[in-house]
Image (cartoon, rainbow, N blue to C red; front, side, top):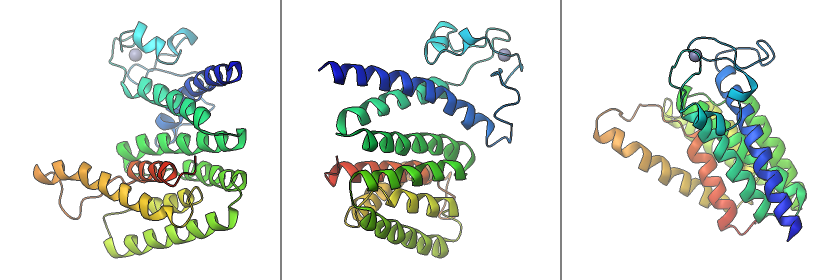
Length: 243
Ligand SMILES: [Zn+2]
């Protein structure tokens, strides 16, 4: 009981702090801004350096009512959402896993997923470092759950399926999606791939239908698949009874 309570609090705090760091990655990596220079966070609108008290996850956003203290520009609501989502997913991972290795590997899965979701939706790119975090987490997961060989087979099959779709669809899917699904495959057994692909496709279709109806998209429009892939794989892990 005490153990669960302490683990839950630690997970949430750790999730909030890391989520705040993921916001820095999400902003800086696609813009090729160094992670160490400038060292302190700054307002994207006025460039003013932020105090530590402007940087407390979620709380600062609420206290500042979503505006910069210096120039009054609106702060994107994506910041507190990333922090809150990371904290909630870290807590879920802590509650559903039975050992620390599995918990950490799920934290890595969700971390990569959050970073990829936001960057993919904003820029249509899947950053390599987030795919690497996912792959490392996948190996850890396979090792902790003693199915390394089967996980490797899933990764190869997953990568292969998406490589074929990538080659056939030409414009619809980026190579980042192919690499990402390969990395995600490490979390699955071969049989789970069916669920993962099914739920990823269904959610992607639901997402694109309104765009097609408003004629904002056609068959050649690029779709950010990253968010649907992580969603599909997360559902497959649950449905497959892996946790
Ligand atoms: Zn400002």
